Image 1 (cartoon, rainbow, N blue to C red):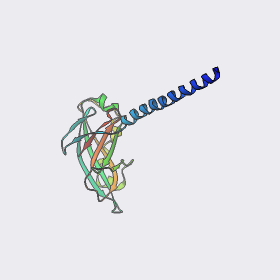
Image 2: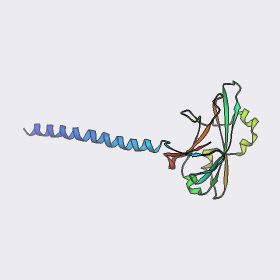
Image 3: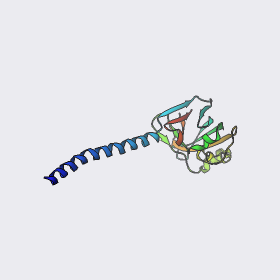
Image 4: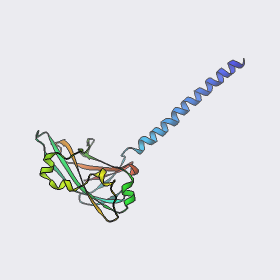
Length: 175
């Protein structure tokens, strides 16, 4: 009789403990997922700076250079950040993407292609978004950055999406 009682008691405990463990683990996973998503955009109007992540961000220009195949284009994004709070600026890794004001996103190219460097030699003087958060900066300093993307040439309206890991789920849209 005692074995039967232990069996049913253990089974009842498993029926409670397993779903509770799954729910708890799922809740933690959902919180981690939400923390890594870009959910709340902070949109900057064209030509106007906006504060985000310890700096005032401003886009200088988005330039489209049609590639050799005529179906794709290199998009050169030049932007700057005037640092207000160096600690907040360097706190999180900068992630950047080019968007078509819809669902499509493009990641930056690792190295600038020859065509872009030939058309805009000044790109070599600028750092990338990720590189800017690594080097030490001072308050009041302006960091000039550039990123290169490859996208279909028929798309004409682009936005620049910038996010820092410590500030997610909010992110910045530069138009």
